[in-house]
Every structure is written in C-alpha cells, then in structure tokens.
Image (cartoon, rainbow, N blue to C red):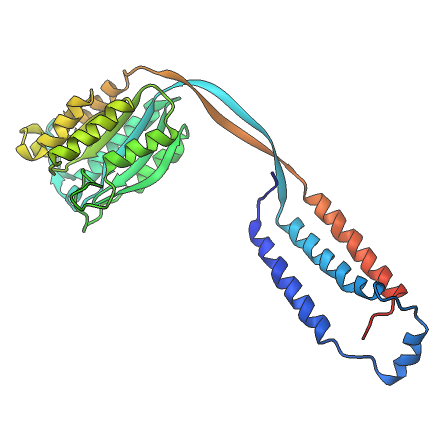
Length: 323
C-alpha cells in the first residue's frame, strides 16, 4: 500500500484542478488579427481537449511527487523476553501537596508529584527489553503513550509530568452509578486487552488518592484483572497509605486480591525499592516490530510530470485550441 510522507501536498490537487477548470472556462478569445493564423492549424474535436488534460495531469503528478509517495517493503520483528507494564500516575490537584522524607526528616519537603516523577525516572532505565505504556489520571484517564520498548520516549513523557489543580480522583469509572469517565484501572485493562502480549502484565498506580470504589464495581474490575492476568501494584504517596487509613482500603484490597500489593512511599528511595521488587516478576517471549523500511517512488511521479509537460508543449504546437 502506498503511503505519503508529506500528505499535505495532496490537498493542492483539488485546488489546482479547480483553478484550471475556472481558467479555461473564462479564457478570452483570440483577436481578429490572429484568426487567419488559427485557421492554418488543424482542428480535431477530441484533440482540442488535450492541452487542458495534459496540464491537469502535469499538476497532479507534481503534487504527488511533492507528497513523497513511499511503499513499505519490510517489517522486521524480533522475539524479546519482556513484561508489559502500564504506569498510571495520579495528577489530581492534591499531588501538589508537600510531603517530608521518611528517610531523613531533615530534608526539605517536596511535592508528591515531584516524588512520583523522580521515582519513575529511576524505574524506567531498569526496564530494558520490557514494554511500558504511560497514562495520567485525575477525574479520568489520559493516555500519554501506548505500550512501547522505547524507554527514552517514556522518560521524555514523564519529564513533562504536572498536576491538574482542578482534578479530582476517579478509580471507579465508568460504572452503572452514572460515572461516565474512564478511570485508570479500566483504561489500563482495555489497553492490555488491545495491545498486551506478555504473560506478565502489571498496572503500577502511583497515587496519593484516598478515594473509595463501590463494592459492585470493585468486583467487576477484579474479575477483569484476573481474566487478563493483570496485577495491580499501588505506590502510595501519602500518610494514609502508611497509617492504613480507611479511605485507601478499597484500592489496597483490589491490589492485594489481584496478586499485587501496596508499597507505601514517603521518599524517592522507598519508591525505588518498590520498583525493584516489581522488577523480579517473570518475563515471557513476545514478538515486537522493530522497524519498517520504505522505498521512495516519488521519482516516478517526477518522470510523469516531465512527460506531461513535454506533451503539453507538443500538443499546443500541433493542435488548435477551441477558443
């Protein structure tokens, strides 16, 4: 299948053809002194349409050449030992609140979103050969990038992580109670269903969220997690996770029931330790696409444009246009 590297130039085709059509409709007649000259040229009912047709073909061919048509030639696939991870980072307004380091109380307080960003920065380089998708959530989930082995790309995405001052926390959605927005758990499940291939699938939720999950919805989510072999690890960034607050109990229980666990985090070191534990999970072999090569064919459009340009010059010499 032909693809175009610069498809915007294809938009010039209808514009050029429309202008050409209008120009030929409004073209003025020759003057009286030129009539005798025109009578000496041979006229054919079909040949008189050749000049505009050659000009139209020239313009179309030129636009096609500018659009850089290419043909995919090869899809290289490679078998790798991998695990599929989905990092879901809480960007609700409360992530801007400050926390103190549990490792060293003398250290200055830092925001929860900064702790999350720094910990993920340490985690990503340890994921060599693993696939990671990255999403952010508050009232709903926002996909930043699908499953990929390009760790540098995920790191760049994480470097731009900021919180939403007006965002709340939604673990349930969507549900039958009227919550229509998709939360991070359902978003990750759907993504694993679509693109997940590894046997080990892990949803890592980095959150301070102290939000409840309705019992019925919790059972629905748990059934989907088990059916798709997804384990949930919660990296809790708030005192509530350390003190086992009742407000975090629903998400904590969901993680444990899925085969994962909660890792209370108060500083970057603790967060990194949690990622190290997750790193011990089993890998499985997956075929991943490494590269697609393309062959340029724009030169054929260039040759066609030259052919029609020469043809246009020839027919204008030999054929009398109907004026």
